[in-house]
Length: 91
Image (cartoon, rainbow, N blue to C red; front, side, top):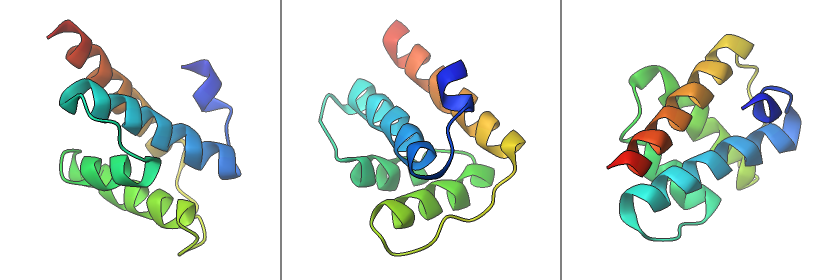
């Protein structure tokens, strides 16, 4: 968890999308690309995280520049996704 809190730029984008890939695999038993996992997650996360994920997918696909999201919002998204992964592991 601490590893992801130190990421920025491209590493932040791929780090968050990697967490989403893990979550999507645990839920669907299918391997998605980072972009596919982000697109899958947009419909499942609380609304406050959707813009972050959509932007990170667009950045990953070279369609946009990374917006400046607050550190708190990024950390909250990370915590949310990690908790979803943990729940999927327990079920």
